[in-house]
Amino acid sequence: MQKLVYIALGTALIAASCNKQITSTKNIEAKDNQTFADLDQARIKHLSLDIETDFKTQQIKGSATYTFENKNAKQLILDTEKLTIDSVLLANGQKTTYQLGEKDSIKGQALIIDVTQKDTIVKVFYKTSPDANALQWLNPQQTHDKKHPFLLSQGQAILTRSWIPIQDTPSVRVTYDAKVKTPKELMALMSAINPKEKSVDGTYTFDMPQPIAPYLIALAVGDVNYQPIDNRTGVYAEPGLLKAAAWEFAEMGKMVTAAEKLYGTYPWEQFDVLVLPPSFPFGGMENPRLTFATPTAIVGDRSMTNLIAHELAHSWSGNLVTNSTWDDFWVNEGFTVYFERRIMEELEGKDYADMISVIGFQDLETSMRNIPEKYTSLKVDMKGANPDDAFSDVPYDKGYLFLKMLEDKYGREKFDPFLKQYFSSHAFQTMTTEKFVDYLKENLTNGDDSFVQEWIYNTGWPKDLKKPTSTLFDLAEAQLKQDIQNGRAKVTPKKIEISTKSTNEWVHFIRQIDPKKNTKGDLAYLDAIYDFTNSKNPEIECAWYEKAFLMHYDKVNTNAKEFLVHVGRRKFLEPLYLALKESNQIELAKDIYKDARPNYHFVARQTIDSMLNYKP
Ligand code: BES
Ligand code: ZN
View 1: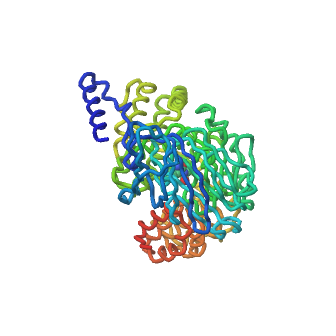
View 2: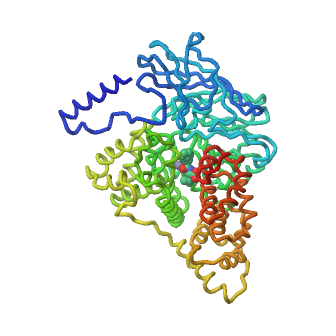
View 3: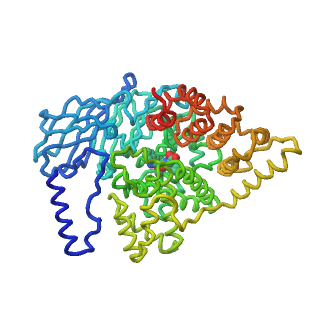
C-alpha cells in the first residue's frame, strides 16, 4: 500500500510541474481517517446478511457475505467494534485465516482477512456484543405501548461496524440483501424494500438494489404496523401511536412532490418513516427508503414536520451524493438544511421557513460559542478524533448560510438549475469539499472563488453574514414584552389557550427570556398564564426547562426529570444537562442522569458522560 501512495503522489507531482491546472484535487480520493479499510486492495460491492436478533442475550448472530472488487489483494480489511468473529470462509466454503488488529479507542478493531488475488467472495460468521455501540435493545417499558421489546440501529457516523463487520467509510457504496430472523410477534424493517405486514414465522428478507454508504444500513425490530399516506409514502409506528403519527406526517406525499420539483425525480422509489421509541438519540436519521424518526416530533399541530423534510432532503444530499469523509460532513448537512427550508417554504410558506431559519441561527450561535474553535469551519480536520466530537450546528446552519448566500448572490433562476444539475451529475458518487468547490467555480460562479476561503475554510463568523429574520417571531417577542412588562404588576394572570401560536413561536417566545434580566417571579407569572411546566410538547418542554434550570425555578424539577428519563433525543438532553451544570446544580444533574442513563443510546451517553464527567 505504501508503494501505491508514492506512485500516486509521484504522478501528481509530475502532473503539477507540467501544468499548473492539474493541481486540482478533483480525482484524488480523499483519505478517511476513521476506517481501517484499504480500498486500494479491495472494495466491497455487495453485502449479504443472514442474521438472527436474539432479544434474550441482546445479540445479533449470523453471517455477512461480501462480494468485493479485488485489486491484487492479499487481504480484505474490515472495520469491527466489539464483535466476536467465529470463522471466515472463502467462496469454496474453505476456512481462511484472519486476525483482529489492535484496539483503537475510536476506530475499533481491524478484521484482517487473508485472501488471494482471485478471491471475490468472503463470508464472516460473527456475533455482536450486548453493548454494541449502534444498537439499542429496549425493554417493553421503554416503548410506547409497553408490550414488546424493540431493537434499533444507528449507523452514522462510524457505528455500523459494531453490528456488521464492514469497510465502514462513506466512500464505499454497497448494495445489500438480508435475511433476518426475529421473534414472531415483531416486524423487522431495514433501509431497504420493506414488508408492510408481519410475517407468519418472524423471518424477513430484504433487498436494497441501490448502492448506499455503510452508515446508511439500518435495522429496526419491534411491534409496529404500517399506514400508507399515498402510493409511495407511509408511516410505521407502534399500534398505539400509529394514528397520531400518520396524522402528524400526512403531508409526506406532498413533500416528496415538492422536493422533486427542486432536485429532480425521487431516486429511492419509496419514502416511509418509522417512528421509534423516545430514546432514539436523534430527531431523524435518513436511512434510505425508511427514515427513522423520534416520536417527539409528534406534537399535535404538524409544526415539526420540517424534520421529515430534512430527512427527505437527504435522499439527494447525503444518500445520493455522499460526503466522502466525515471531514466533509457539511456537504451532507448544509445542503440538506438549505433544501429542507426550500421544501417547507413550498409547503407552508415563507413565514414558516423564516422561523426555522432563525431557530437554526440561534442554535448556530450557541455552537459557535461552545465548541472548539477548530470545529467552527465548514471543512474540518478530524484526524485522530471521533467524528462525534466535531458534531455541532456548524455544518448544518453555517452550511445553510453559505448556500443561502450563493442563492442571494446568483438568484434562484441560476442557483436552482445549478443544484439540480449538481445532484444528477454526481448521483451515487461521493463528494469532497474540494470537488464541490471546483464544480461551483465551473458551473455557477464563473471562476470566482473569493468567498470560498472565508466561508469554507476559515473558523468563526464570515464577514458578509446575513442574519435570518422572522416577522412571526417579532410578534412573539412583542407578546413576551407585553406579558412581562404590562401584565405582571397590574393584573392577575389569566390562563390562556396555548394553541394560539405554533410550536416554533412558543419556542422563540421562551428563548427570549433572559436569565440575567428576568426573574423567577416572571417565570411563575408566565407559567400561570401558559402552564409551560405541564406542557406535553417536547420542544416547549425543552426550551422552558432550560430557562427554569438556569434560573432555579424549581417548580419544573419533577416534570423535567420525568422528561429527561423518558426522552433520549440528544438535542434535548444537551442543553438541559448543560443548564444544570452551568447553574451549579451538578448534583441534581447527576442524580437525574443516574436514572435516565439506562434509557439513552450510546451516542447520547457518550455526550452526557463527558459533559458531567460521569464515570459509570
Ligand atoms: N443525519 C443526521 C443525524 C446524524 C448526524 C446522526 C450525524 C449521526 C451523526 C440527521 O439527518 C439530522 O440531521 N437530524 C436532525 C434533524 C433536524 C436538523 C431537523 C436531528 O436529529 O435533530
Ligand atoms: Zn441531517
